[in-house]
Image (cartoon, rainbow, N blue to C red; front, side, top):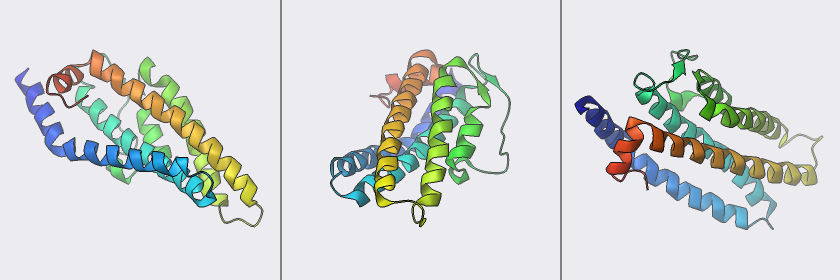
Length: 178
């Protein structure tokens, strides 16, 4: 267990500040969503929440990397071997997550496929002459709702790893998970 303690300490050193930053941005995005009378805030909230999801997926993948050899997880190997997680797009992060063949990720992957498709279409049509402002608002609202479902599912996955893995038990004991 000593090596697990060292891994947990390394995780805390590397990512403790990241958790603080993510909490800050989550609160700011929630504030933007409440300002839905202003179209630009609705659009911003969707795009920022999509970006936030990318960072949560990076953290999840790092956590899965730590536990894959010590838990009952079927892992197919890195899909994007030469890239760090923070250099990957939402779709690439989803593809990396698909390399873990476990039931507790299945729903998240389905939601991520839908979100990735929606975000790509939204981002590529935001300034298009063929997309009306009303369409953008409708799409941003749909994107926010889907993003919220994805974030809820990410929370469930983190809760699963917290309750069912050695790193989750260790992080809970060290009060890293609240």
